[in-house]
Length: 253
Image (cartoon, rainbow, N blue to C red; front, side, top):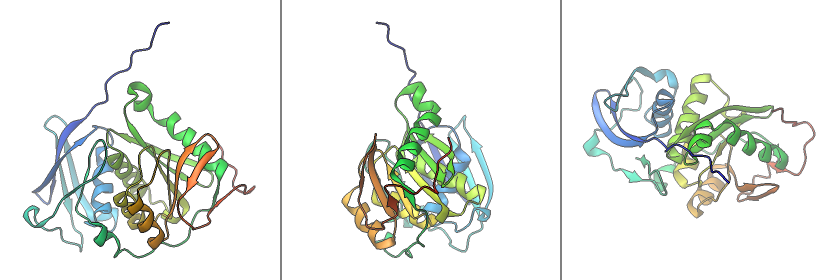
């Protein structure tokens, strides 16, 4: 039986400059880089609104992104920043520790969904993950509202895919309490931190959540759901926002 041949996942080093200062270099998939820039800066607390980003210049040929920010939160110089490598494949970087994340304000209770809704969102995420279908080696992140999926973003790294999805959501002006953040990758503490800073009250995955992620989510009021496979899933937190059935939440795909 002939096997279909898939292409290789694409990653390349990108150096981010903020206000003309080199911040770090990271491996990224070169799609939706503006979304990633906005999402990363917001998730790290360097901006509080997307309009605090002025110029974004992307040079894909040389792997460089320049972002000018006019935030009240002034970024520390590169030498003053302590970097934390995120766990897992396609490592990302964060400047926030678990201790920093604990200082975030708890999110407002938001979206209530059914188990069926989550299963259908998972299917929609993979359906919309074009690069995954082409290569079999990409991560995806989905943003969905109660009436269905809104967008899918992809990257070689799970953290980068979530940053891209959050950046796109911020640019669209979505109400964070009304949307679900879903990922193909493991949910770690820094991912919960980014979702909570965004104001999202629910994050879900096809795989696991770490112990630190669950502890932080319980403290910040973020509902965490993992292992969404078929009709099976694991609800790690106690927000009671996932029901067996809610007839008013009918997902249209």
